[in-house]
Length: 177
Image 1 (cartoon, rainbow, N blue to C red):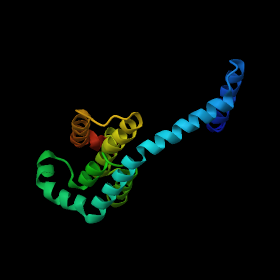
Image 2 (spheres, rainbow, N blue to C red):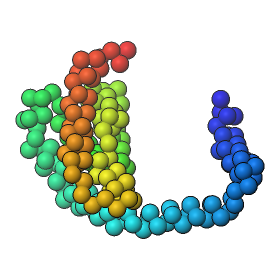
Image 3 (cartoon, helix red, strand yellow):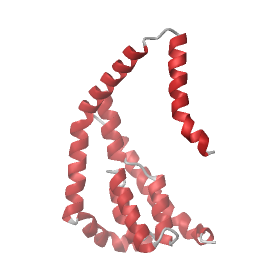
Image 4 (cartoon, helix red, strand yellow):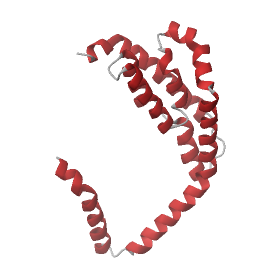
């Protein structure tokens, strides 16, 4: 199986070149045009991404997520959501790498097979980097008004956290065996 992985990318490149040659496509011209469009897209979304990364870094460095976790702990306890995953739940809509760093911290502190680790795993897999995705995709096509996208996406993220806790609460003990 490992041999397939080694040859997959070179095979795709060879097939693209062969197919392009058969169809008489200017392969180098197509490649440079695609690279040019990629750089143009990068330049158009860079301000949104820089602002997003700066804001998340400032919130994390200020201790905002910890203060928020402490504030929300009574509500989380009533809802059956471990307060340990609150920072992950708030970080996930903003940044994938930041949320996976928090996920790794949860694994190191509680273990991946603990209830908190299992819930955090499901949260990471069932929620989206909402603001990052909107910044990239909407920015790439020039959409400035997101309308209902953000409320709908954040609702889906919140439900992902709630149902992750509920499902692991009901079935998580079976995952440890």
